[in-house]
Amino acid sequence: MSLLFVREDREYLLAPGDTLETDLGVLEVPGEVDPGDTVETHLGESFTARALRGPDLFAHFERTGAPMMPRDVGLVVGHTGVADDDRVLDAGTGTGVLAAYLARCGATVRTYERDADFAAVARENMRLAGVDDRVEVRTGDITDALDELGTFDVVTLDTGDAASVVARAPSLLADGGFLAVYSPFVEQTREVATAAREAGLEQVETLETIQREMDFDDRGSRPSTAGAGHTGYLTFARKL
Image 1 (cartoon, rainbow, N blue to C red):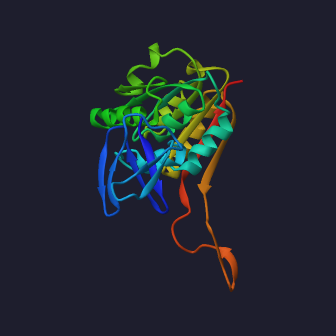
Image 2 (cartoon, rainbow, N blue to C red):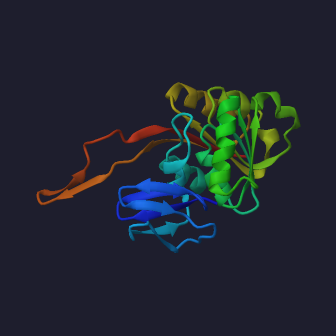
């Protein structure tokens, strides 16, 4: 499994047996290396091996588009309570950040991605995350498989036509199961919330995800004026 090799403000993602040429020398990764081990370049400069954690996956996954942000993933995990041995149905895999996080929580994830090239990248990302045994990436449209899917503890959607899947959510969710839908546009969000209520789901709520960093200097403290704090909208519902 790949590890991060870290020194001060540098980090490199490398696998056992890899060789990397840097201005600090050539770093040859041994065939057997564990997190916490120190590896030196041929010039004697040290790098420490570190296991990949969630934020590292977000930074180092190969991207096929804009991945779901950690702030959004946190809301999904917190509002659905996804846990060990949960069964998750996901659609709109993309880079696979959400699927990987949920699998690292102990869930088994089946995820659908329409684009075959994107799906191939997602499978490689699952191997990088060490969760390829818990995440099945299927190439195809989830709407073509709705009649044969069975039931799941959590359903997560990040697709433009999510409302059509939400309409079928009662047959996809186990009793007590949760639905979470990410939408970049408020029009889609309203369609999803309406579909959830019409389908008979309970506890329907929509949240806009906004996050602001804080600036601290000699003059005082205030929210940062740089960057956009908004990412999207998350709609949650439950089958009681």
